Length: 280
Image (cartoon, rainbow, N blue to C red; front, side, top):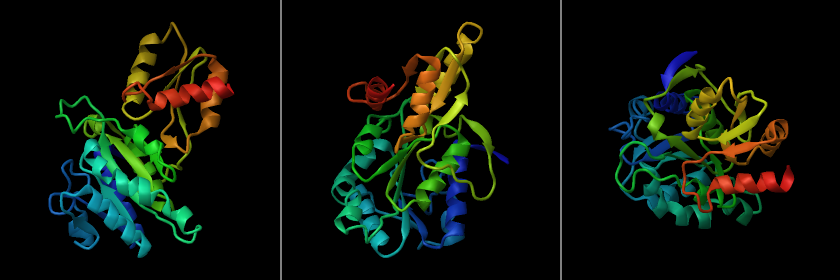
């Protein structure tokens, strides 16, 4: 185990996966010479060369469109969107192409494409640097979505996304890029998509959260200690969702509080609440 910050764990995952598979490559704005605006891709260009760590123009639709072609040629591209709201120009490519091509080709072609981007507020950023757009992506057919809350999961979920045969979007809580540290397994480390994590056991109420809201839920549980026994469930993967873990925790405690950072209207928390209302 190594103690790493969250962004160091992302960098570790990229180094590990590029070393493991020669078809994995990274592309995005300033990912090469600069090592990324958050240094998530530091050292990749020096170690693997400019053909596998590619600096692109400031054109998100072009980045994703190029990645589609690279998938067709046998590559596994990892696209970095510099900030959450910068990704919106690429939604056309994602919705009309990336998520549909496996179906369009009758399953003959897979598109092992990973999109990773920092998301969320709390860093006093300008208007295009602090969105929580996960619901846009969860709504897109054919696309998987995961959000880590710890350095270990940041590495493990990214590795799982890169190895997955389908497109996966990874949102990374930039508030915790350098403010959170944790033990991270060395070498290859994979956290399967679609598996939630029970952060702490409890009996009276379940706090359900993901990403940067998991530490918030943990702090609230700490404040209630001695008064209320709180279970904290980190869903980790928004799609596919681990419904079994969600329903099991709700059945155990009988009460659920859902915590999200994104706008309330049509937020992902509403989907979780609907599942609980329909199936618990």
